[in-house]
Length: 506
Image (cartoon, rainbow, N blue to C red; front, side, top):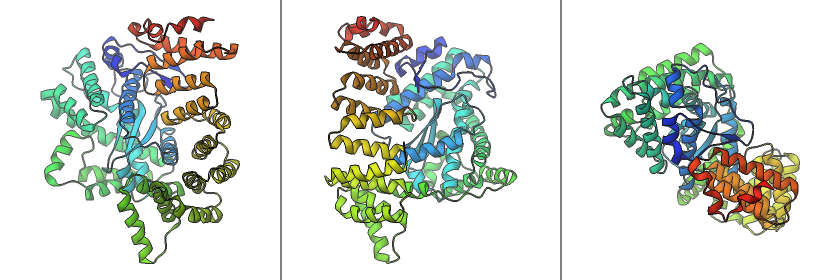
């Protein structure tokens, strides 16, 4: 995980061509070599660090507004698909983070710095995993090709500072709008004025480039490259009314055309078809999403109608119905079927996780722990199972074991913000206040708030009874964070937190 200054410093960072970072884990190179159509003025104006910083700020606003779906099973699946694509992208300079947004609109978008959002509505609209991989590969290519920055720099009349100001206005406009695409569109119009038509034309060219590169990436990852073109046709069938299509094509960066669909098909045929059957993870994730984000009454009626038709529910539909019962706080209805699913399909992790959830909601905490312990023995360090088991342990008061499990997991897998808060809570409830502050410092780093992160470490350093290893670890981390903070904030951290910084040097 990279550590960056907060988004409030973004405009200054762009104009001064300066940024700072410190590492939590091994990160991608910040080199700008091998990027197409970017000369040294572009690199001077907008570095990869600047892009990551801006994307982090937008992601922070989305997370705080509750639009990001924090669900271990869904997140784990999307990250798996994303990793299969990003690991085969044409360059390795970016860190990627794929996440699902609670939004029924069929859409996906890439933010600067490798943050890629997939709307829940898009996943539910796909007919197969190849289509989903096609959309995600397309958005991945937008990031690797740095299309947002390239589009702004393409306006040859814009000077270095003007280009930086335009990018800052767009990204800060999105932040002010809590991550709303409408806010970004408004910022584009406000900053580009008469040049907007040229910019949109360039964006259309970027779409073709993202298609071409994305199709190659998905084929290399083992997905049928025709999936992208077939989903374009799905989008066309789900397009809004004609009066809105113009506005969408003018302002949003996914304009559709017969030429684009044809070119995507031709490209796929040139590469060669790849046989890829839908994974069980795809099928179960779609049903889980349907139950998690849909109107509960509509979801209930949907599964009721399937049962009424008498054809019998498929395995994934049974799972979706059980998840819906859990969401509607009716775990008693889900438990018998989930018990049966675990017996029938003992290698499917999702069934154990849902059964553990149902038991916990039904106040059967011992049963919840037992089934999740069994699952963790079968699937060591499985992220959703470890999270669910830790939650069950905490409900039973075994916070120390929950902390140890999560600590072990996060040495191998980077946690989400919610998962970081969970381990901080486990440490606190276990009486380990120092480590709780330490974990919370990472939580604030994830949302770009270095001042709060430093404050958490200073609170940890003020606690009595720290051993020498803890003190050294906390002090070193605090020094790293302070080094990454804007100068006007470095001198205020100690005052804001009771002058605790002096302890960090013992």
